[in-house]
Image (cartoon, rainbow, N blue to C red; front, top):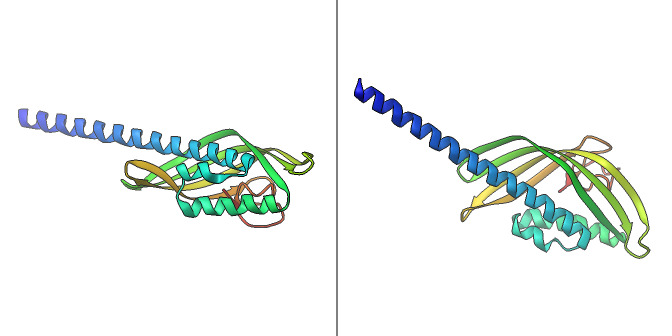
Length: 172
């Protein structure tokens, strides 16, 4: 009887410890996604995605950089603000791999670089976003992002308001 009690106690402690580790990891993943979105908005506003490299792997940073550069070639600066984010699902495929599903609400403003004139103003644009993250050297990094807009055309980034007729997922 004592052995069974000890075994059950050890099992309960192990379960609680795994649960708290998962909770800590999930919180770190959530914070990485939030930092990614902060750096993304700042990068578009300053037309410099250097800060994104602190939270995203190079291929993802490059994908967003090319979108920002395309807007710049069109003499447009995108100002964006994340109004709301809700985390719908966080899953760990392994100790170093996570996938996250969010619902995000963004406001966008496209401003002419030369004149400062607002060329487009989009409020309350909703994205259903899938993030893939990898843990390296103890830190979570955004590996890939795919978003689908609920309003207007979908896009591969937050580009959907920038290129509504593209018919592609937005680049984020």
